[in-house]
Length: 264
Image (cartoon, rainbow, N blue to C red; front, side):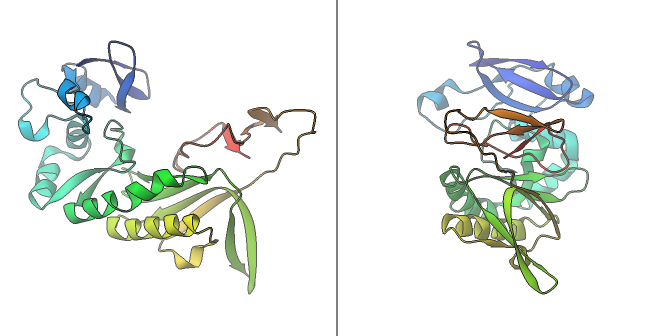
């Protein structure tokens, strides 16, 4: 199946004939100068056989080794020489959210093939099972090479902090955990956090390996019995998303992005 491509100032989008969005990556002039001149496809055979599909090009001068969109994105940002070195040392390009069509540079990272397998049988299986409780994502900051785990809570959840020799319990809306460029440590903590949430245990920052963190405390809205809660509420010039059984967070972006609303 051939895909068409378009872009705005932020994103390059890959679209099917029936106008389904099949994938995306960030827009840069350099990346568009490469991507915009190529033909792009999804394998019809893989779709029919319900296999994992990738966006790829058959255009020259790309070789078999780097025909897929995410490979070309990494070669553009990091340079082909570095990608070659990582591949030769048994490092693969990891889709952090396990979605092969999300080729954002924030969603791509190098990981040794052993850790890639570990993630596939642990975090990648646990994360979707936690969705009713929390939207949990991992991002990679290309500029700093740091990782960040973000958690957007769809159910009531608390964080324990030690302040002045006292334990402080904070109801959470979202949490941002910052990690250095160490995928193994990051994955260990991601699995620990997922397991803690699954078992309904409170998070304790001191038990994690993050070097820094930020959090947004939960805001609570009381709706009169005769009224239904709106999806959005504006308060003091800020827009809040009202979480409910029918309105939930799918993902919380990294702390280096700016958003126009907060969950409550």
